[in-house]
Length: 203
Image 1 (cartoon, one colour):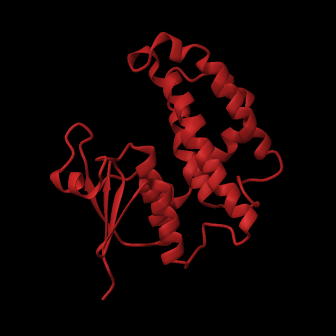
Image 2 (cartoon, one colour):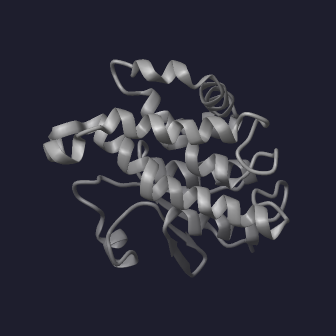
């Protein structure tokens, strides 16, 4: 009997999107517990020491932190697609890009998107310029390839795309985005991937 997969998620959370997209890429059945970010369920609070989404329960194993969950899924379910490169250097690239996303890209997007409703004036100062500098890095990475690492679709793309999507959803659309045609084309390709279409369908 196969062990069931249960995912504690929030539909619009980019970190939870990473996990749902990976599950769909793998073609794995899973059950979703949709959480209220202002009132987490008692079970999630018991499962995660910081009460955050996503949390995945696979059989008796509890795993949290989105990038740890996605790597676990790739290791445990190596078919029908491997999402981590086989070479050690490229695997390190995936992890470095994920770190860059979580610690530089996401915070900069948050300051641009939410502004002084969440951050101080000082924290928001220069937010568009900071995002522009970071997008230049992505544009360079995509200058010779359709994907972020090794020329193939990988967890690097899954990990970064939900945050690029957040940026593209800002209203009004930041004018500087037109300076990054490769990033925009990459984001459009990923938005049309069946795994992402399934990710955004509500149960």
